[in-house]
Length: 178
Ligand SMILES: O=P(O)(O)OC[C@H]1O[C@H](OP(=O)(O)OP(=O)(O)O)[C@H](O)[C@@H]1O
Ligand code: HPA
Ligand SMILES: [Mg+2]
Image (cartoon, rainbow, N blue to C red):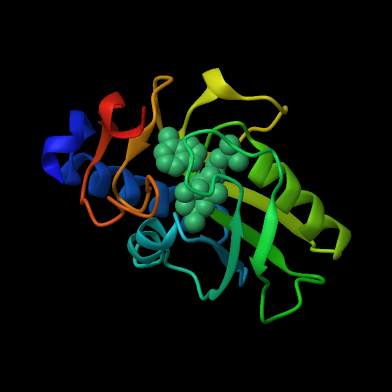
């Protein structure tokens, strides 16, 4: 598995320090509120579990699974809801937890869905941002690291469902997918 990594971009320690920082800012911003924290499966599972430990306000967690990449390194452009939320978002302060914003298609679709369901507020926290690849105008409210235009894996992110369990994030060798 490690042989398939071209370069480590951020180590486990760097990621954990950033998650703590994000948790502190979010805790301050949501003081006195009870946000509904939505994990976008599967990629965000690891970030979600580390982040909520650093958020010091009462919150609820729910999960949504969407997919647009399938077994490819390019977005299909079609976002599919594979698993919907268990609870209603009406009147709730919603915080979407995402691992990466790349084209922006997944999140622009999700934000639209949640706003149409009458959430009180919808904000986004993403650990990784790849602005070079954006095809729709979309910005996170909170972001961890800005990445170069390369396909990355680890810390929840996959290629063809593999590499999610790496504790760091790295660039996947092109030979693996070409
Ligand atoms: O900004 P975008 O171009 O839409 O890309 C970002 C999305 O793509 C990945 O999910 P994917 O569809 O691969 O599903 P997964 O989380 O199950 O891996 C990633 O976890 C984000 O949700
Ligand atoms: O660079 C990436 N790696 C893994 N999954 C992704 N989904 C969007 N961009 C990426
Ligand atoms: Mg994926």
